Length: 48
Image 1 (cartoon, one colour):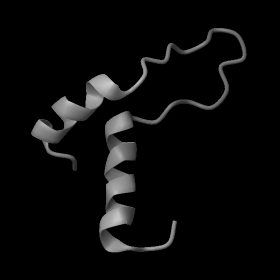
Image 2: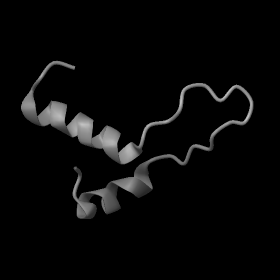
Image 3: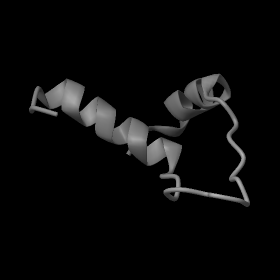
Image 4: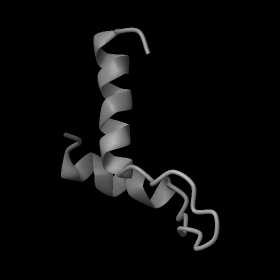
């Protein structure tokens, strides 16, 4: 997981997206988990 100290610095930079009532589309993923996955790919060098 992403450390709390890093998350506190990154979270304010992310846009706040409200879920649309009509045509909601795909459910959003947790931003912190997405960041964790991106950092994992960058750190390990595995293919996306």
